[in-house]
Image (cartoon, rainbow, N blue to C red; front, top):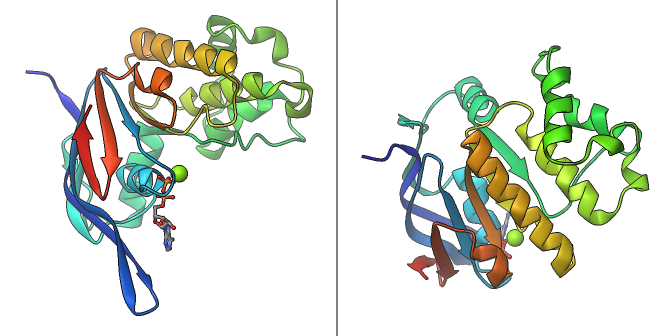
Length: 224
Ligand SMILES: Nc1ncnc2c1ncn2[C@@H]1O[C@H](COP(=O)(O)OP(=O)(O)O)[C@@H](O)[C@H]1O
Ligand SMILES: [Mg+2]
């Protein structure tokens, strides 16, 4: 049987809005098999970011259970959740959030420095080389194109060897050509590093890389 790296059951999330309540996620079940890609489409405001934030431990649901690598994270102390986040999870957002005063190589190494891991230089250079960006290593973010910056953000997300990569509309600011380059990069990472990927997108071509494809609508997931 395929191993499951991430499993969520009965996820409910609502936000108070004055006297009323906005139910954004209304009982979501989803799981991610090791080495698979799951994509979630949905209109703006459908709850994609809310769901990704919850699945990636950045936010807490009102109801429901999440387990990562077989460990239920509900009621775990913050330190344990941070540990799980740091050891299993990488993030890519719509905006790259690279730090302008640091070189590309330094930006990639920052998540490792935060973990006090000082021996990641070789991996950073290997990733830059493997993913075709080695010539950018001494440049600064402002010297790169939008597509290049987003590819660097992917490498930065990989530096701590995550088992799951969460990407929230990663191609949202890219033109079609750069979106497809990024998609190829996701496929390569998935294949070569066996990283499981959960991504949200507006773009049907991007959603197509999913082994499983969902649409998020009125608080529920439907298989596409
Ligand atoms: N912290 C919050 N407080 C109140 N409402 C929120 C909050 N975060 C998201 N929402 C609302 O939840 C809905 C889903 O938002 P979001 O998850 O950002 O959707 P998407 O990423 O699909 O565009 C929206 O109506 C949004 O306004
Ligand atoms: Mg969003």
